Length: 146
Image 1: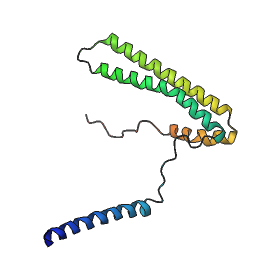
Image 2: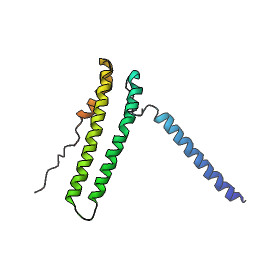
Image 3: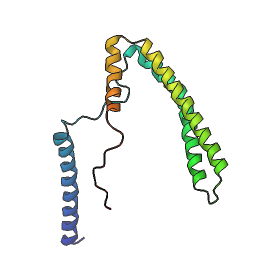
Image 4: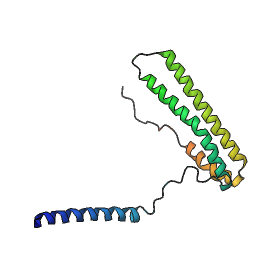
């Protein structure tokens, strides 16, 4: 190989190494004070966690049924022919599945709550309550042009 080719390969290799070190330093030094959000159920009391996770696995098939039903409903909406009866039927099936899933999840939370102390209740449910205090829809303050 000629000296020019070796020099180009050396420069490319150095560039990749510098980029790798730059990313490593950036992630370790500059992002070290930022924390990832805690796991979704991190504050479940230890004595309830195993049972909760087992029960959550029981609810998973209901969630999968709901998601599948929702997907089928959306596919039905994309059909070329508009069939209101079929759409109403698919919508009812989807809502029924969602209701079953939400009911089971609510029952699970009631069972979990019955095993918690007042302090554990505050630690677990307070972040969820805070999430519901935020509005779902942001106000649009733009004026409507006439």
